[in-house]
Length: 320
Image 1 (cartoon, rainbow, N blue to C red):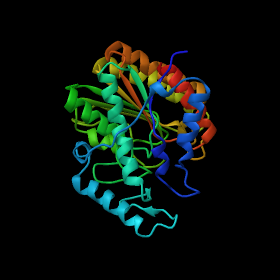
Image 2: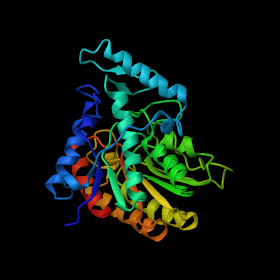
Image 3: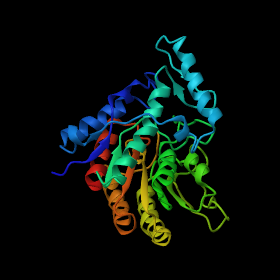
Image 4: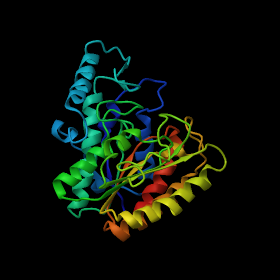
C-alpha cells in the first residue's frame, strides 16, 4: 500500500480547551491512530512541523493581533490551574501552550508547502490543531487563532512565485476568515459548501469578492437535512469544476472539515465517510489537470471522534 505524507506532532495535544469543549486534543489522536491502523502512514512519512514566524503570520494577520494572542496566552500561565481562558476577540479558548501550538499549526502548513514544492510529495494532509478558517486578519473566533490555510497560501505565493491558488472548504461552517483575507484578491479562488443559516452567519451566494459579480469567491450555502449530501455534490460537480476550469489554479489547498459528517454533534449535514473520499477525488482530478497534482489538505473541524477518524482515513486514501 502506498503511504501518505502527513504533517503531525504530539505537541498539538498541548493546546488545552477544557473537558467539555468540542475541539479536543483527542481529535488529533483519533485521526493519527486510525491512519496508522490502516497502514497509511509510517515514521518516514510523518513530517515534523516548525513554528511559523511572526513575519510569516503577518502575511495574513495584523501584527497587533499577533501580539495580542501572544500576550493573552502568556497571561494564562500566571493563573493556570487547569482552567482555560477565553481570547478577548471571540470564542476561542486558550491555555499556556496555545500560542506555541498555534504557531506549529500554521507552520505545519508551511512545512507541507515546502515538501510539495521540493518534489518530496504531491499531496500532504496536515493533522493540525487548533483549526484556522474562522480566523480573520485581526480576530480569532470559532476555535481558531491563526488562519493556517491563508498563511500557507501567502507563503506559497511569496516564496515560490505561485500566482493562482484555489482553496476548497467543505467544513460544515463557512470559512469567513479565509474569505475575508482573500476577498479582494483575484488570484486566490475560495470555494465553500456550508450549512446556512448557521455559525458564523456569512457565506451567502452574493458574496463574490472583488468587482462584485466577477469575483473569485464561490459560496454554496446549503440547507441542513436529508438533501444536504445531494446539494454538496451538485455544488462540487456543477459549480466548483467549471469554476476551476476557468480559473486554472496552480496549487490547491483543502480546508478539510469533517463536521459535515452525519454523526457530528454540531453540524446538521448527512455526509458519510465514503463521501469525503469522493469529494477528494474530484479535487485530485482538478489538481492533476491544472496544478501538477499539488494539494495541501489541512484539518479544520469535526467533533465526533469515530467519524473524523473514519473520514480522515477515506480522505487520505483518495489523496494518494
